[in-house]
Image (cartoon, one colour):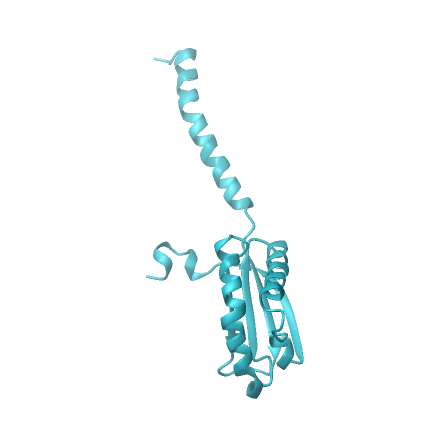
Length: 150
């Protein structure tokens, strides 16, 4: 027995939109750009670094916490080498795009100037050289079900 055209139409009306929606969701997910990671590396005089890191912790990090809470960036932080090259201090920023990183950096500088106009120039004061790089985030253990490997 063959189904009537009306029955087929009813089945298609019920099944295809769900399948089409699933396909569109999959395509949208694949089209999403992964987050951007900015890494900034500095060559710093380690003997001069402690007061600068204290300034960063007490003055800059609260501003970046605000920017994270406001959704401008996903994460921000500093790291100091335990065992590495002359590029011994770094900053990382994770955001949706390079433009978001740049806008947040500009906003951070504006807030820093407004709140702490007499502060020194942070890492630029004790670090004669620095370099920046922007990267698209790739696969990670965070992508696994449950947040890690089994």
